[in-house]
Image (cartoon, rainbow, N blue to C red; front, side, top):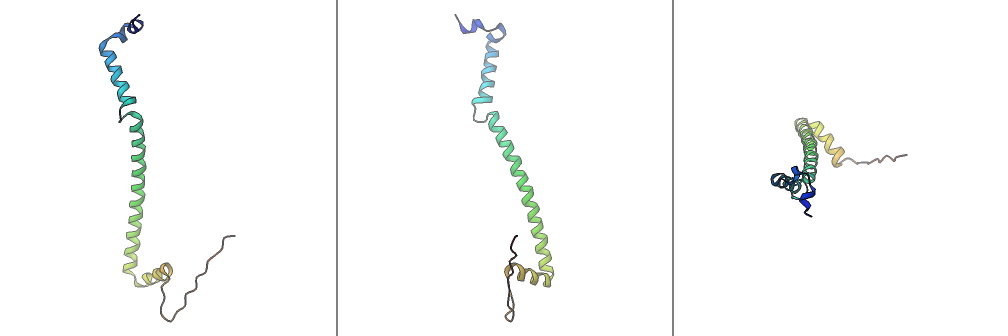
Length: 100
């Protein structure tokens, strides 16, 4: 018995068999199959979200830099707090608060 004789007449058509083979190839076997496309789309959306986050952070840093460069007192305060800079006649004490 022929395997094709067991199928309904619609599925014995050459074009239907070719279409089913093509769809099987494209959805499951090809290197750009549906699963890969979904993974790539998810990765793309995650990377776009990260891009937005970093663009916001860059804008914050630019704003802070602009403020620091325009205000000499704020620049001195920032340098003292962040980089522990001091004048020659000063002593710097670092107080670390312990978590309870």
